[in-house]
Image (tube, rainbow, N blue to C red; front, side, top):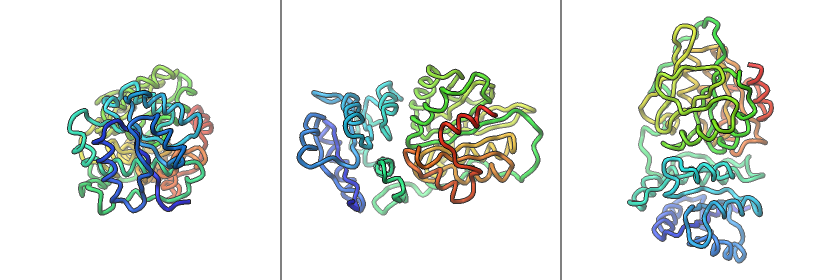
Length: 362
């Protein structure tokens, strides 16, 4: 197996192909396998040079659109795919369909200022490529550290911890309330959430979800899940009450925290810096659950690259919550759950089916 990730770009924009090529040339563990202006040309090149490890794919292209090509890829030769498209803006239906079909990540690029956007998104794109490669079948155990390299332009505040949003309270006993379920997920989380949530009954305890996604995508995800679930699902708004049979999803580019109000709970939506390189951050949600719910909470850390949520899950466990991580076999990327297991944050490792049964038991 090569020491480098073989990347292939399929985009009808020459600027996009050239800019992404220049970006990956500075990465020691990524090499450009090739590029093409549309899927027909890409398939012809694959026959000559072999399949790449990761594909960056636009949606709107001549001769064959990206969604059609994605379906073909997943049917004939499943390969990690990153959607990078202007029609992915604001969580479009195409973008959500791509995630449901198996795309590892979706990056919404602007219709103007593309070159500067891609350069400014260097860390996001490189992180996505490594996460995509880590999702390859049989390669989940390979470590591809998401650490920032000298080529990655990212602010010094990008890896702040949850202290920048809220302080961890002393470990005090909490009066008994209804159960609060907190879920954190990242790469591969859409597929996992679509597997878990539709199997939950209407009387399920209230659920809070932080899924790493940009603005617009979280509302589209909530709307999509709401259509296929017995419980209601919505993008969280400041002051929303936690209700039985409802799941609230943290809005993109905002942190979501739990706040106790008597014997019930509400959510507070907060601005602020990225925490554990993410906004929304799972660590922020989990810390607020540790603070406000204590042993009334149950935490689940699902698939994703990096370690966001691991420390927060441990804080929940130390305050009496039941805490679980998704098992390696079912994870698209076994990063966040692995980090939680390694620091003793998880009581047990569960399959998605076991997560469903655990939630049903309350």
